[in-house]
Length: 298
Image 1 (cartoon, one colour):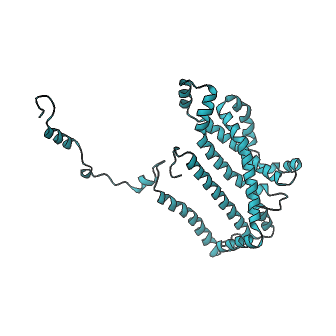
Image 2 (cartoon, helix red, strand yellow):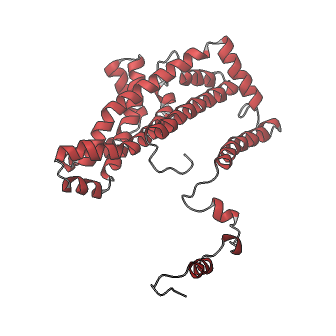
Image 3 (cartoon, one colour):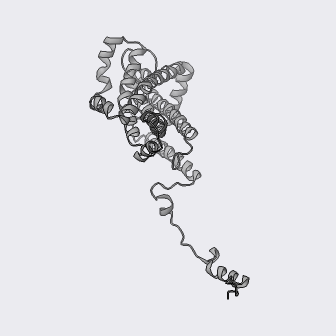
């Protein structure tokens, strides 16, 4: 009951609050199923589970490879065993200076990727920000990106010779045009509300571009660069197809001529490892630069 001055009595107040409050111990929450826990769209999962599943993916591929090769279901000529491929890789490293080939290929990939990024990122941001640049370049780049890089190798040889510049040009050609379109989409998809708020606060057009649109695009740009670097590695064999005397692709092509299947597998695995390393570096860079960006188990 309330007192005469209208305030509730202490005992009445505590009793009312206690009755209104439901103790968590008195409520039986339904047990969440593993389907709801792990198959809910965009819901994170425990880091330990994420790591285990990532490892299991590699283990599964290795198990299938082992089952097919050790049991001779597939002839060794077509699929050597993992131990044979590992032995071939060790022999390449110890006896044939494979580290020089790895460095030659890595240099070409990084050089081609850097050139594509330095030119492609600014152009993509301009195309995604200003319709003038989009109208001028989008259709042209959209057509060129469907042209196979391998078809331009004879022209690159005529124009710039058969040295490293020709191989880097193939990687630039294969990486530049998709990168521009990816970055354009990132810049074009910056929420319009960000720009309108900046205009409302008195920002000029160039202030909106440099201080709102570009910073808001940076996480997506880094993601696009990560994707394109992966594509650049896929152009390595094409780039080293003609007139190469060093590189992983050169080693793979030479091994194919002499039917050295374990060396071919060793070269392919090496490219995969280098690609995984570069992808991991970009993941960590993303987390370091943009800790505020939403990611689910990056």
